[in-house]
Image 1 (spheres, rainbow, N blue to C red):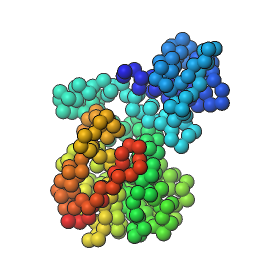
Image 2: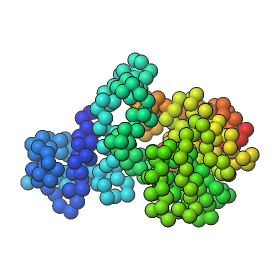
Image 3: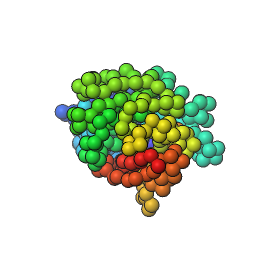
Image 4: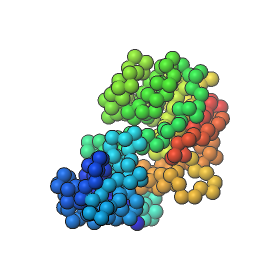
Length: 320
């Protein structure tokens, strides 16, 4: 079954779904358009027909099914970039057994470095950032409506990447001001997202290292899909830095998928294995987040489920 994700990676890289918008095409036509080998491409496509991603007619032409539509790059729920990223790092994906045996990540074993340095390489960084932006469409579906942000005057997004979530919140709350904070490599992308949303007059983009300091002056701080990247020790260290600037009546909001008792196969569990392979962090239960908050001088006050298909939960905390 591991060949299905690899096949999805192939068609995502080649942009096959975009070529099938409007009319079906044969494998030879698609191969000519993508500079690939027709017979081999056909074998990949027919496998994805069996998986329900494409359909093949009696003339040997392929079309997109409803399941395959998100592979297009021009739709709001596109997963093309995520498919390029998650299934394309063959040097990592086959090493889960080595991770289990050693307790190290596949990135450590393959490259001798950590995930931040690994994805700092320009080509990898471009794929990684595109995938995170694509996945955010699923992560953040319905989350803004799940929490009442009205009393927040200034919201600081720590480790906010290119600012997708912050721009959504600021757009919904026109009286709010924001600060987007992340490492220097995300600065340009963050400025672009904020500008494209028409928010440059209300949102500042700042670079720095959240292990050292974060911008002060906010009455609420959010960290979205940040804490799950880190071990308990490092996650607590990040939260302590945020706690140091959090006002007495301030709020911390983590946006994370949460492990629940009796979980069947679901996104949080699959994401947890992705952390094993790449970052060394983990997805956590509410009890584990409660302990993490306590270690950082915070009290977990609410865990609010959202309509997000990935199980995104807003984990609210206040100074203890």
